[in-house]
Image (cartoon, rainbow, N blue to C red; front, side, top):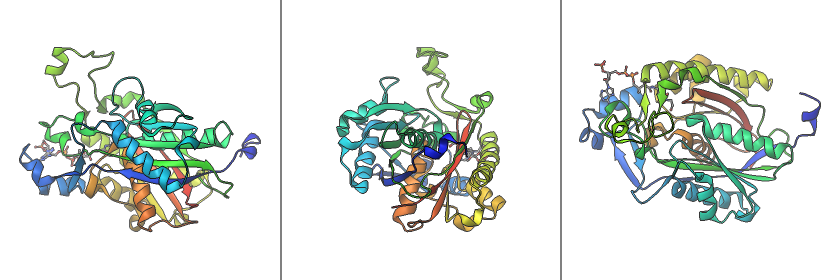
Length: 334
Ligand code: UT7
């Protein structure tokens, strides 16, 4: 550890919360929309159902509800939040940031707010960013939210993608606690040369919003599934090993591995490679892939279901569009 980092404060997660839309869409429901089957979806992905937000709900509505649940869990007032980050690839609008909409909704008037874009790895990146700002004393309390209304950005006529995603939001509250370890050293990486394998090509400055662009369905998420799958397994496995090495730990020290929830087969493959299958957290069956929301939702469920208790270490690992990836280790201190 460098000399300067000796004076950094230890940062912990002091509260978690989720919001999941009420409407559940099952694989059987999808059979009525596209040429697919419950058998195909479950055997290829481990997904059974996903939540879909109402037409009158935007991403910030999901995010605000998760944020309020996390603040209540932390037992702190909204005015104590100094920093509010929303990670999303399905923002309310291009600008202003979804974080500013959330701020207004929940009354976090003392926070400065911005969005962080790293696709499915976004919440992990946002936790790292917030942690570092708290650690160096720039802020005291941060609210990190991963929220997605994926249903707006997928083509409901494309069976390759529409069966894979769901809507939802998860939030964590971070604060300097003086605990021994808290959120430990993270490892992160990106490879922009592979951006085209998982992206939404239309609507930005590259392919502005035009009738032609819309006719080509460029406003929807596109994915080269098989390629993404291979990179996800490789990078997440390596990230786990790198995070363990960076903190001088072994896999035996980890109570629960919490991976991004994109596909049960990906999670299974990582578990097998590391020989930790019995400790891999899995909830993709219920929510499908909620992108940046998946990790904070999983943290909340792992903790509240008792799979992680005070003093346990959990290892968070993610992979997403960009490509982006990373992992960190969190001592649960609550
Ligand atoms: O969250 C960020 C990271 N995202 C991921 O990590 C996702 C990574 N990729 C995956 O999870 C998997 O690649 C998928 C679940 C997307 C696809 O599974 P796969 O085993 O790689 O299937 P495939 O793409 O190789 O497709 C196999 C077949 C194709 O038919 P042909 O060409 O072999 O005749 C597809 O057309 O399955 C067909 N197919 C479907 N069939 C029924 C694709 N989607 C469907 C569907 N229902 N929904």
